Image 1: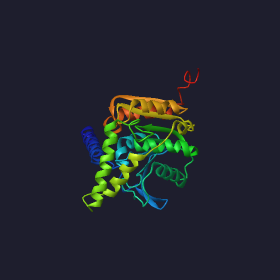
Image 2: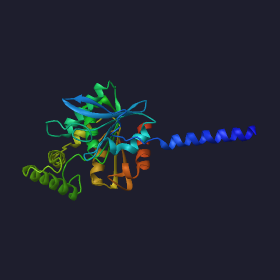
Image 3: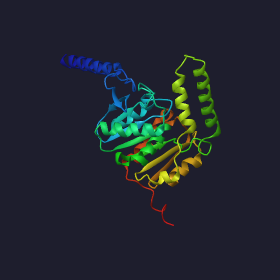
Length: 284
């Protein structure tokens, strides 16, 4: 009889534990009211979230998304690092500000954020436009950087770096926004669309000599189905002194979301290991 009672109690406890586990609401990254905060940077209110403990890791998203685009990466890396995810100007829950968008402006925002958060230096993972910002941080703010992962980044805004359709689409989106602003259309924020696409249409303009200035380890990362030409990714790799190269097979510009296990494992290996790759590369 006692065994039966103990068995019933144990089953009840297990049932309660499983109910609690399955009833927990998944975290909505990018809109987490429990941890989300705002910080004033250069007169603009930027939204950010922090997860985990340990070495600081800064996530910088692409042009068309925000913190929410990093959901799979936050979930993975928060168990290894103190993850800082921030919405760049005009994206997610951050203010746009009155100035035109530029990559250098946003790199400066990130450097100021690191200082205000009283961090010494951080790992940076940037994808797409975030990768461009990460590269600029390596050039102009090296004191704040331990390592950089630059995924799907381009150093020029034209077809030397991007496939032609991407260049055409960006220009057409900007022109459409120009027309809708003139027509006073209010169906969406055409002013933001204009600024985002104008930035991509004419920026960045980062030279080989600029890349030579980066003195921290960089993982230059892309896919063989990306928006960026493979030869341009290789140009970046060849001109950054301490660079590793990863081109993911059969994946696209959206691999961080579509195949997070592959993306996360590749990045994790680079971050946790000492830099490798110089054995023969610099011996003529």
